[in-house]
Image (cartoon, rainbow, N blue to C red; front, side, top):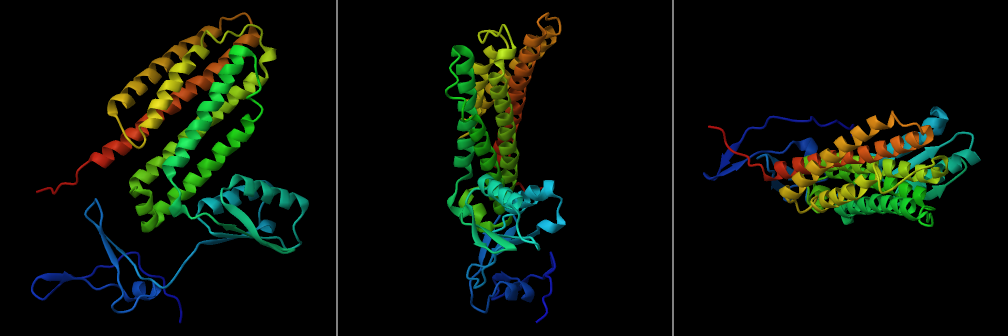
Length: 348
């Protein structure tokens, strides 16, 4: 039977049966596509907007997203982007093909992709085909736990960098790049999870989020990932501190870091259990710190020690951007709170 793509929407007429019950018929194509027959059950959910959502509760059909990637058709420097896009799309199976067989560079690329993605493995490999499968059930994961892990990684790296500035002990800086890669991997995992929540009613239920909140959490995870980039930049500056001469971690811009860490902690603790007063206070503190750092950066133009000025300016810029992204974080959390507490009312 030829497949007919269902319409995105149809107008159906309400009917009254038994004198007290309203019914509406379901499109036949939708029923057939989900393997339903007469007397099967569907779940009807009342959404916050007032809309109803119908879910095929007893469907006999299982679907999964699959993606085909032909390396011969892609520029070598963009192949990793296509692999990551396939991962973020929620693909359970990614089939990678190469007509002439995989080179050592191809295999290195795929190993890099496996390291970036969470819960994916090569499950089948031939001379011209490699199949990569996602083995993680997103329904068992917690977006909030993954976000908290990102927060802890960013926070601890910055504390380790500051410990080095204060003591000269670099023993905790060896794995900064590894921790940065873990932050990036968690960001991809959360974005994949959020994509699933936006598409799947069951994932939306298991995550305890509506689609609007999930989209805002997507903005939040990208904001934290950018903070991680700037913390990593400070780590790279720490490894080059020998090029500067007079660096005092008890002076600006480094004296702002404890305040930022406190604000960042307060905002993270309010993602799930919001306290508006704490969010407002953190945002005000971050704005003050940004103003202090901006004035400090202006004063560096008058410095006579060029190497010190460049080092301090780059450090200050990264700390200032941490404050800016934390303000974005505060605003995203406020958006989620206000949306969750808003009421749908009937307009007369």
